[in-house]
Structures are given as C-alpha cells and as structure tokens.
Amino acid sequence: MPEITAPSAADKIATATSASSARSRLQLSELAPGTVQSEIRAMTTECDRMGGVNLAQGVCDTPVPAPVEAEAIAAIRAGHNIYTRMDGISRLRTAIAQKQQRDYGLSYDPETEVLVASGATAGLHAAAMALLNPGDEVLLFEPFYGYHTATLKSMRMKPVLVPLREGDYALDAAALRAAVTPRTRAIILNTPANPSGKVFTQAETEAVAAVCLEHDLFLFTDEIYEYFVYDGQRHIAPAALPGMRERTVVISGFSKTFSITGWRLGYVTADARWMGAMAYFHDLTYVCAPSAFQHAAAAGLEQLPPSFYAQIAADHQSKRERLVSALRDAGMEPSVPAGAYYILARADRLPGATAALKARSLLAATGVAAVAGSAFFRPGHGENLLRFCFAKKDADLDDACARLRGLK
Image (cartoon, rainbow, N blue to C red):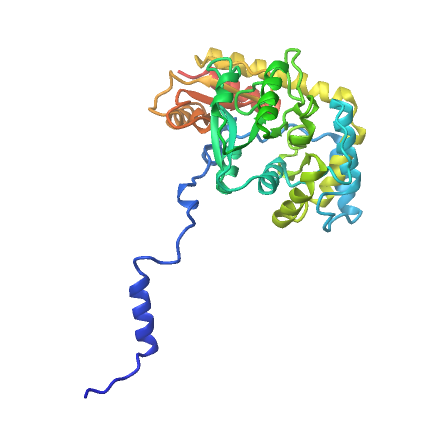
C-alpha cells in the first residue's frame, strides 16, 4: 500500500485558502458597501483643494462668544482635562435644565433627565440605541438631513420619508398619517430645519404631536437651530405640547449657537425613564463629552443675556438677505428660509445632468462651494437644487456673493 503521510502545515494553509477564497471572512460589513462620503464632506474637500469659498458645510465660522472662549481656556488651565460623569458635569446639566425652563417652560431634573453629549449627532445615536430596535420604522420629513437617515440605517432601522409640499415645504398631515405602519416607532422632527430652513408652525407641530399620541410613538426633535429664526417667526418646542413631554427626546447643542462646531458638544433632555439607557450607550461610544468645553458651554448659558440670542437672529437674517440677493442676481432663484442658516436655490441654469455635477460646475466657474440638493431627497429628487450655508464671516460671505454675481 502507498505510504500515507500527514499533510504539512503549508498544505493545510493552501487547502484552507482555496476553500475560503470564494467566501472569505475578510469582508466589509453588510452596511459598509452602501456607504459613501457625504456630498457635504466631498464638496468641502474639493473646495479646500482649489482654495474656494465654502458655503457647502455648516461650519458656522463666526466668532465664539467671549465668555465661552475665556472659560474654555480657564478650564484647561484649571485642570478640567479628565473624564467627567458619563452624563456631564453638574454645572452644565443644571444650566441646560434652567435654559429649558426659561425658554419653553419645560421642567427637567438635571440629575436624571439631562445628558451632555458629544454633539447633537451623538445624542441622536444614543437615543436610537436606547429606544429603537433593528427593523423599526422612523418617519422623517423630506427634504431631510442626511445624518438622521444615515444614523438610523447604521443601526439597521428603516427611515421612512414623508415629503413636505414642494416650494413652501408645508406639512401634509394626511401624508404623515398615511406613512404610519405597525412597525413605526418614532418620528424625527428637525425644526428649524436643515436644509430647507423651514420652521414648523404651531399648527404643524400640533399635527405631528397628534400622530405621536394617536399611535403611541416617540418623537425625536433636532432643535439645534432653535435661535436661528427670522421675520418674526418663533421656535415651537414640541415637548411643551400637552401629553408630549414623556415621549419627546429633545436633542440640541451649542455648535451653532456658540459657533463651536469643532468642539462636539450637545445635549439631550428626556423623561427619566429613557435617560439611563441613553447615558449608557453614550458612555459606551464616547465615554463623555469634552471636559473643559463643558465648563465653557455652562459659562455661556450662565452669562450671556437674552439680547445675545436675539442678536444671533438679527445677524443671520442680514446674512440671509445678502445671499438671497446674490443668488437672485446669479439667476438661481432661492427659497427664502424662515430659520436655520441654509438656502435651497434653483440650479437649472447650471450645466450638469445631476445636482452633484451642477455643484461642481458652480465651484469650477465661481470658486463657491454648495451642496447638491439630491443629498437631502430620495433618489431622483432635488437634482435641480443646491444648498448654500450663510453662517460665514462677513468678508467671506461678501466674497462669495460677489463671485456668484459674476456667474456667466
């Protein structure tokens, strides 16, 4: 009989390699192949490469309020550079609770109902981890903010889009009701909204609340632009409506109000029943928000007078008017926003079959970066729109306006 020898280590490796070559375990996750760099980040990169004026990303590069800046430096020098409690320092949690009471009459216990998060984005992530399950459906209004839909998809939840009326972005309450299914668990409401600048009215907010109450849904609110409201508009806090506090997760932050987008500092206020789980998941992912910056935000809430917030609105309304005028002169009819600091404008006159190509044509022609409107709509929609951000230093905004007016 022929001699039988044991396979060598090299043979074993070769056999294993051959068997697994068709189905390697070294693969991207099921989610990863469908992910691409956001158009906002892509346009920022391209704008930086050519030294243009970036009206694509909402970086809010206006000056940081003096008390906030001074307290950040003082906090670092005072040694506030280590972990904080997972839900944030007591000083900031108390200041947030007082702010919610002052502005909206909402009472939150700073010990059990306030979470300081590593940005509003982290607040949404923690809330979704704590309160939703894979396969749950969440209703969002279109045009939508891409991070909202992407966050849900990353946790295998299903965003369901409810289109707002084209042109004025009014709420269609019937369409909202029709979108509810047995798998619906929550609604995300962004007001004032990115990218449209829509401010939901009292009646519209009450209509959203009615659907939540009727179908026993959570309401996640993104209120990061709460102070950016124009033309006599006012921000309505959904949690303050009858029956809504216990089911509303309020998500906001300081990135826009204090012009500190790079500090990554936000917060969540919610009923104590939900907060413990949210804090746990935030701790698991981020540990805590940046320590020294928490002291800085607390100083801003404590020291800045009501006139500061009114001035934010006045300053940005002036910036809005300048960009609206320039876009009209450039032949790109804008939708004038009631809030936030973005403008959606028509891009029909620009070359390109898609909004992404139109944005790149505009950048090449003028050096002004905008975001493809299609980034905020379902496939096939928003292809003749571009989004512009006007939260810029005056010199940069004026430069962008002059460039746009030179569009041939």
